[in-house]
Length: 441
Image (cartoon, rainbow, N blue to C red; front, side, top):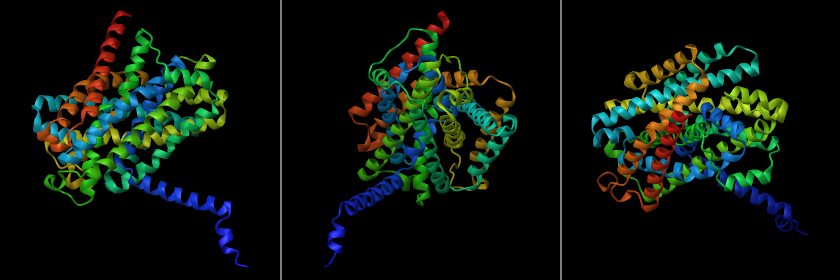
């Protein structure tokens, strides 16, 4: 009797085939992800993790709705930036240089660089603090170690290798999803807070809300997203703008899937960090934390060693991804504004200005750490700068990607335009209310 046909039809064989097919589909899906996934994951950098942790500790589950609310706005803006880079063959600063006065260009670049340097300082400080907590070695020594390692990575490796490393680093952020389940949250309350927005009229609440929006819909991500789409073409041998101009419908669909996946992942991680802090810190009366290190330390007795280690290691992995993106977006913006050669595919001797900006931004961020500035104040001011820069830059992005003379028949449709304008108005109103409530306090 031939047993082969029977074995092939057995339940175990069917399950094995399905698993094999799903694994193949996942590998193909993951291999097609690139700039969008990296950009989304980089958004959850250590300063973002600290902001979300402080939010959950201060206000409990109430701000969870912001993760749902910000997702479509963030996704729309990043899709626009990706399309801009793909269709024009230039990064965001390069397009602004061609289309707008120089004061607009250099004003945006200056604010971007200042905000990014504060963020780099906060991120290096956060990584060093948590590493010191895990190893017992003073954070003072870890800050330059991380700065040197990350500068070396950007200087000595190609864009393709960096992109592969960054894609795998995104897996570190799953630690925050696992940590949330270990925290045993009150799920009915979580669901209610997710679906029903609650807003408080206080300076602390609006400062936190602007911090969330500024950390989530960050201007440096606009520059990075467009520049990475250009880098993808350069890596394929398209060295001139003329060769890179234009994008097929298939390429735009693939980019849209990449961006939506990255932004969904970013907001999912944000959601679970707020949830973890709310379920542990806020629930036990620890509402005044000021750093990610304090959040990690507080988790050990409240949620166990597993959550503590996941939170800490996730923060280090996030920093390894986020800091290079912050320094890199500075370099892309300045290089494009000055019309320099600027690409991670080009060796440093051929793009010395581009790499000099990376090194200087990292050095200034490290200098702020050693200057003894308060980490919380650095987070606050970087959020304020991001909040101030985002609305005008959002307006520029929406206008550029809606123009036929810039995008041709690939310009924004009604939904993208509506989401873009909504995002700009929401961030502007939130920033104004924050300033008004802060002055009245």
